[in-house]
Image (cartoon, rainbow, N blue to C red; front, side, top):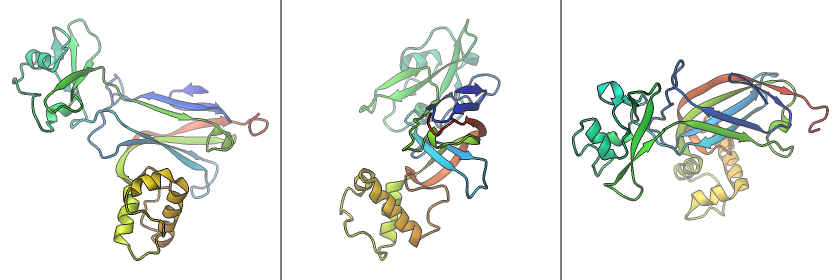
Length: 272
């Protein structure tokens, strides 16, 4: 694989790894901050450019985001223009160094103070340092300091002739795009459709409980149910939703990387 800024050149059948450290600053590094979202996911879509839109190859890969989310999508700067004397080790150090009220982090509900990213420097630093406070899992009133926040995005497109990988890509130009989305999980959407449309001829083997697990554990059933709904309610799903999309509804799409070129070089045969 060859890289030209964000453009890529790969060989047909080559495993394609995307590893991006996301920054929201164009001239200097400022870590990308994911705001509060429901079921946030990064989705990477690859599409061919050879044919018209309704005939071209298009495939998406989904990557659930399990990192911290913040109320503010810009870092909050420490007092004194962000210059600190020493690196804080605990939330109480932050309270002392930043002259905050003693109970600033010691709350028993979801405080917005726990949902901010903070930036600071030591006297001799040339780059900003980042930290946030998070609640210790299983504890209401115990917190810990997390240093070195970053938002790193990874996709691994493993190539196999029997799967949707680069072995199926022919020698031509493609585009890829990365988008941050949130939404409602597919299995929950399917359950809500069944409840709102009980008169449709639903499957006889529909379980009385654990429907979400039943759908997720049976890919063929999930595909059949999706196609069943599409045939009878053709406009219910958004156009970009496929049967294997983890989200059944997409909200608040945010483009992370706009459509960018991938050049695929042909093999003499399909694989060798």
